[in-house]
Length: 390
Image 1 (spheres, rainbow, N blue to C red):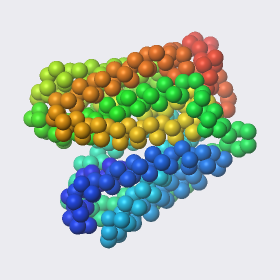
Image 2: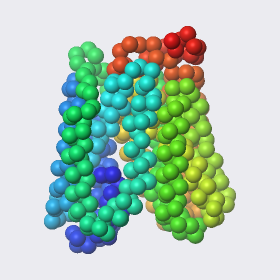
Image 3: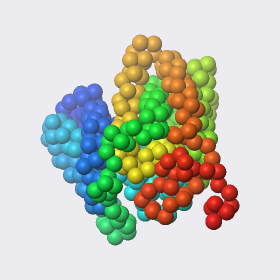
Image 4: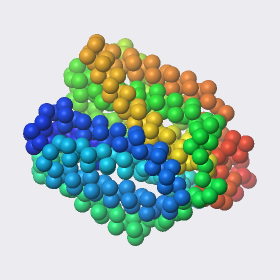
């Protein structure tokens, strides 16, 4: 919500700070830049620290960033506050998946990450409309103060309810070079870059695309958001049994949607149907990619997740930039064509990465250490039989 809220408040922010809407839009961009630059170095530096204090520090930074944004009298202060909040977000994304895996049994790691990631489609689908709604009620400054207040409540809840987990120390701390060289990591990052760049081309410019198709953008986003929640529920139930199949189905359906939109040019009900299929595949994307990277990285899970965060934010920036060029060059008709090409590329990479990145079969937990995935190396993976589960 902290990341997406400004998009629904651009006119008010621009008027309040006496700047253009284009400059106000940089509140989203500078936040993503902070995440992009900070995710890997901050995650690496904090590997040895206990997880709960690190997570609490990131949320305190959200409180500070949102409060400064609400009270700021100049765009310079706002941009600095947003950059700091973005850096905190990069660290939070770097540790969340490993933290979620470390506080459950080994056979619950996949569903735990899917549940932890349920906030992603919620924020993507609700962040902009809630921002617009709150802005009408309490103004843009009040909207950011509400986020700060909610963050304070979240801090208290984490202190009293969320179990702590140890960091990694000494020889147990893998190096960045070692994690990058781990088989499967590079293909996973390439899939994220191609898939999410395509997604962000369409998602960033869904308003002009919907307008050209004569459909309501709010209803398209609602259809996308609801189906995303269904998608993440499906992934949470099935990710431990059929990760590879889920990944291929999600990317393949997205490619089919893009081809479909390219052929029909966006027509009424067809756009809503496409949004539903698109959301079903995207809803569990974060959980699937983080599960795959955590399995491949093993004890390098935190650094792997930081790389996932970096790739994700690169894709956001690339999608926005490339989509803008396409929109200026050839209008909305070029958007689904580019998306289709990127989705097909992501599908082919995932299809080829069968051995290490997206292996077939059941993710069978074979370790009692809850901080390490039992499937951290391909030779530990095997098809599950009832005796194996018991």
